[in-house]
Length: 579
Ligand code: MSP
Image (cartoon, rainbow, N blue to C red; front, side):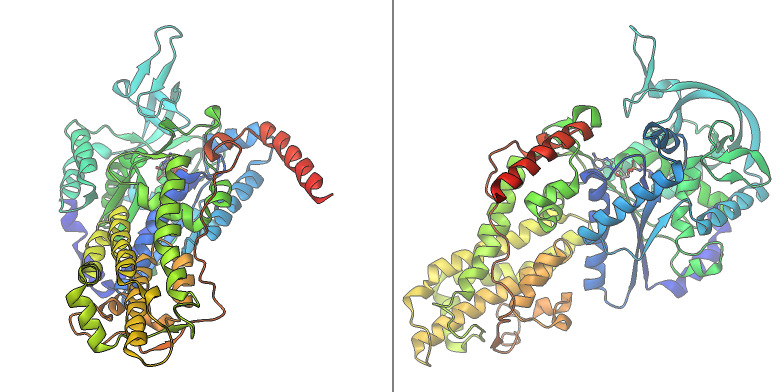
């Protein structure tokens, strides 16, 4: 069993128990990023941010980057009449810009065209070769450039009318290819990979484990891991054979190692990845090829794959030809980048495809971020109720009265009491929609409490019982905002930071353990001391989005020519407004 051969590496893992290494897929640079790509990155980022909050002693490391070799990239650069290296630089930079705007807090951004990666690929190849897992053979089959993979007959659809064949799964065309390649003995890893897949919570959600096990119930064929250099020249040369280049998927998967400094042994401090986030379309590569490559090289495969489903737009697959590709930068102009992050995590579920619809985005962002969260902060900070701009402490006797005699008070206490535990459970499974549900339910309870307690009927200022009751209502409301702000940090880092800034919560008091400090805690009286709000921060968190007169955002995704035309229209409009 190959597993026994890597036991020594698992033992080495003992010394790096405090590392939590997370990866996103690396993104093809054939076209600009869209919301689907951003989604993979936002899931990984929110997961890491939660881990940093919850486990401050763990070293969390997030790696992302761009996948820059292969026919697909070669062809895209040629179609744009740009030298391929320059084309990669440009699109890779677009990814970095989008990730910066979306606050993807990565520790490394790797590009497969970097020297450090090429060295890692070369070393990995030698490992596979020296262990006898590579051989040369004449190979023929149907190659799908768009998916960068050979497909078997059962993975194809024949169009009777034209005689053309297409990938069943992606719908992209395939071409017949006959060449001499290096092959990897994947067939020898059938049992090992099955054993790896079947470990508890290895593949999440379970539906994708089943898909892998179905594939593994048929004999695994060996796979081609090189292409002739005269066909695919934009790739890493096979060590000691200039006539061949390394297959783009073997090249790409190794990025997870090269980012850690492999082959230098320092990589063992973080290896294996605790979680790899991938979309469902690349399950076979990460769930079968990747563990087999690693086992063959004597390395430990990842601990967990988190697989997510796809975004469609108004029920349709995003595609350039349908002009419905949603550009995150454009979408953020309308929803804000924090709003977009929230919508993706709040609406997306891992096990089935999500539908990106402008109407739905507007409804959710307005009702949850503007009306439920934002409005409550504005009300609690209103000068009429809170003339001294304080985050007060509750008065003990008023607190117990409000909790005993006001149902809405009891309900708020109950929601906040369970908030940390419930959200923790949801974050652990990357169920971000359930985290949002839980936090929004607590905020609904807080809004309801505020309505029922009627603070506007009480007179502010002074130390009358009336004023003390009002302070207690404000204190309870601010506790709800603070706890929900802490809990939602991984999903909306910037918006929650503005919320917590306004409430003047010190950075050191924004971690998971501070969720136990509020009026609703088991030991009351351990909330923050009465303090001033931050006068420099705005109480306006999220402005309601007003429906624009023109078309919804997905219909505004355009071809470059259309976009040029409407840009000059906009420019005309702007100059008309200015004159
Ligand atoms: N380069 C490969 C991955 C190599 S990893 C060693 C690749 N790149 S990709 O740019 O095509 O896709 C990157 C990620 O974006 C994948 O997780 C993919 O599932 C995700 N998405 C691409 N389109 C998507 C949607 N429409 N919706 C959600 N995610 C989607 O594959």
